[in-house]
Image (cartoon, rainbow, N blue to C red):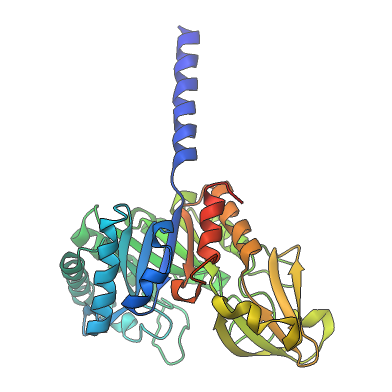
Length: 363
């Protein structure tokens, strides 16, 4: 009898391991661009595409114009060719959630938003909602209201959405990838049962307000820079978030910073932000003919480039760092990897192709 029970346990364990190994890695692309450009990208390599962005109109989720409606309808049309593709609508974005704190501070505001979300999902035949409120309870976009009560109100908002949308629609949100957000913005244990995915924005970790340069989307922390993808994941696991609900973020865009010195090839130096640019133009922007030398940080597992004459630092993701991030998500048994944003990728042999090859074990 004991041998029989042992065999049953071994079989049960083997089945569960096999299921876990076969679980498809989510590949989630945010998209902020015109409908007509969507055909240029390999949509078949996505599991989810997120329309970016809807906004608040009063207490309701609103898709602002015919152009945006056309984009969503185009996304939904891909399901005929790719039946497993999920189409997600999103709220907010950087600078797009000015009224979130006051609207979601009341039960009426939360309920009206949830009902309007259901109406839009039904109208477009979309699969879910992604909340990109930057940020509950802490300072985000300059001038946007935030209060400590946002933390609780965010939980109540998710509860209202789940009650209205039921179990079949997906609910996710974009989470800041830095310590202050993780520690102060979200009631992690309370929201876990309410959401399907937590999309961690593990990019812009060095941003426009930063006074010291660094990697804006590193995989690992360094002695000089704590904020990283791994740091965010480890803190969220410690906070009680299951690995299977975590999605790490990749950057399909790059950032230029002006440094004050050429020490350490511009990294970890006094700085100010210049501008961002899309991955599709990366290698033209940081070419040797323009004075840049490309480097690799073996600790952060992140690329960067530096123009010594002009003292300009470029920080970005490339094919190597994207492969390592995708493998990290697989090794840690996370739900997946997401990125901002598809319209900034190359249309051929881009970073989405790297994710797909790694996911399939071809890298």
